[in-house]
Image (cartoon, rainbow over all chains, first blue to last red; front, top):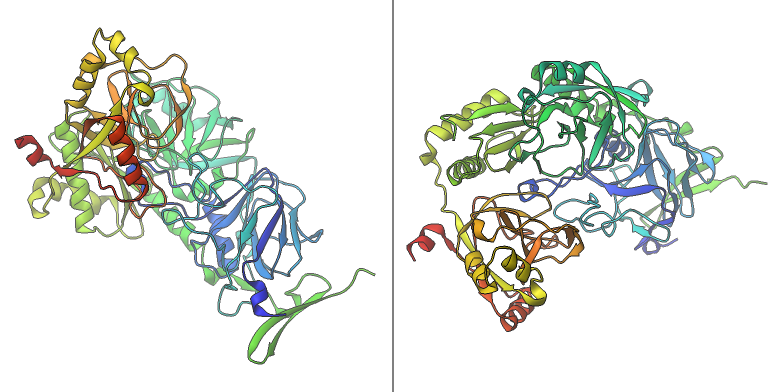
Length: 354
Length: 247
């Protein structure tokens, strides 16, 4: 068991899943040139995942949509799976989410089925050994840049892992407090701040917008969430001189059906924006899928800022619970830290299945 | 242009400073000046900005600053922009091979406007085009200043793949495709320049608020520049706009 054996190894993708892509906080500072940020659709789950494996907050994770991949680890590692409950399994045995899980060379992580929500995240201690593009590993699918070759993962891909083990201790395991794990209902209420162009809409339409339930259209994707429901009326024009767009902007084109812009949205757009979803609630849209429903609730800017503070505080290392050592391992296995001639090795001992 | 900027909320992490509601160089120049001043002042809490035709989207971290502070800063800069030295806009000289394989719709654009191909090229290379903003796809410049005499409607059937560098006309607009993409613009030429290279340290060739002048080149020049670009040896010719105007 030589250390060098671990070099250039990583995760072999045995099945890619429906849409598995590398995402991080997003690609910033290039929006002025028309480059969308991309980045994780549910920033909350993504960021908590990195905390659990003691990664810096901008390390890329796998964003797993609707149907999970099948992943063979070619080296030992530590992972954490967060977000929508997708019944993750380690070698066919169900493992808990929202906690760090040690993985050995030869282990397989797979996902049985999505229960609710839309997207899960898998953070890997030390991150992926891939080159960032314009400062980020986020995959921007439309331009085919970032992540793993600018595309979603498919069978046969090998995701190289860094040689870092993540964190100083490497073997301490954490979990996110159960009572803080968000639910993933099929109907969500999203808080919005009205504007920037709410004055383009009739008062009746603003009332309709705030008092109706909308259904997520099947054409929704990482770029935007298209909504079906009562149509909204513009007072005069359904066009503006193109101005800036951000994830959360609620554009309403001439047909009157709102579109909530999301991670891959263009940087500018020419439709009036009735409202903007507050950043604390953006992760909730990332967990809605076609057929799910949402409603909008108006809040003041001040309330939105308070919500943002609460949101940021909920993503904190201080909230993590250390998992006591005796419970820190998957059933019927133990990991020991062994030092031989000054080099540290982690050894897992498993019980054979008969 | 408005007598003073209007501020519109764009959620809890962005503020729009709007300076007018029309496409005109003066309003857009104001956007550029405020944008550059805010960058140079390194205002605390501003995370990113998107300048557009007539407004500036200012993204901020609400834990570090607030709408009140940002409005105050923008208004202060607006009153006395002199505190920060704003560089002159640049003119980028963009070589274009017109017609033939490089611009297969040039004949159509000419016929549509009752002009010769030669006249279309002369009209297209004559103006100084302002880069009002970037958007649509990474690196795409919204240019202003094209002669109406060469305006041509989009293709009825958009092409599936238009190569990066293609120069086209869509109604009263002209532009350059920064990446290979589908599109319905009438293609009149092609530039050998690389408009967007994600792997470069400066991925984008053009910035908003600057200018483009198209320069006609022949096939040999196109090939030569293309090779230089590929070897990383070509640097695009630029000069300050005031110099360009004095010519």
